[in-house]
Length: 248
Image (cartoon, rainbow, N blue to C red; front, side, top):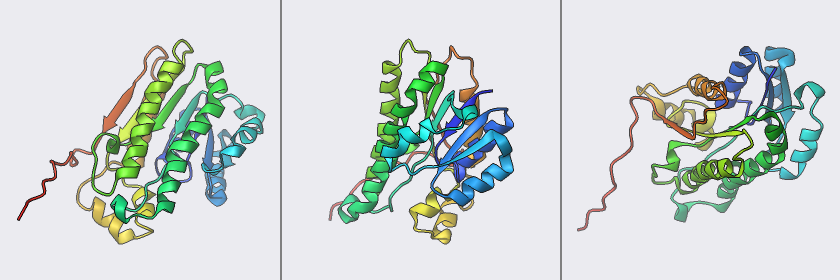
């Protein structure tokens, strides 16, 4: 039985992926900061799920947490780097530094540290790394400088990691979704449900389950195939035109 290590498993894409992989016959190690949600998911998914309370900012505990995994979960065939967030959509000149640091610590520093800590297991299993990037890595927008920069890092990190792992049998993929209706926007807007609802109103966004299905497809491809990067959007979303400042 294969094992997936999924960060940010307490909501959204991570939670949907945990359900998908357990239903597909895998074990899942799901991480998150909210113990009560991990316990609820364990109650739902049973012995195939191990909830690991982990803060992506606390990189110093990663090695010990991995070493302490129960015996059935000690091998890791897939790392899904899903945990991530975005700061409020303020222009950089109007933004506070604290939320920007939180994004960088989670989306970049924590992702790199956890990947590095799990690489020995992934190399041993000839496994895979799937990183959740975003269309923001390619298409910039006002108020998204730090988030988009972090997701561009995630994509380029994955490409560089493929170079480092050449010959190891480990696959590396960047999945880059557009608009997915999850808690992501609710968190970004400070819990403003109306703002989140307005963003997705009447446009038929992708769902967490859509992305989980895509992750499952990538993870279960024959081991000689590598998807380098995969960008997907709802049909109703497209990239914006160029912004133009009009004078006088």
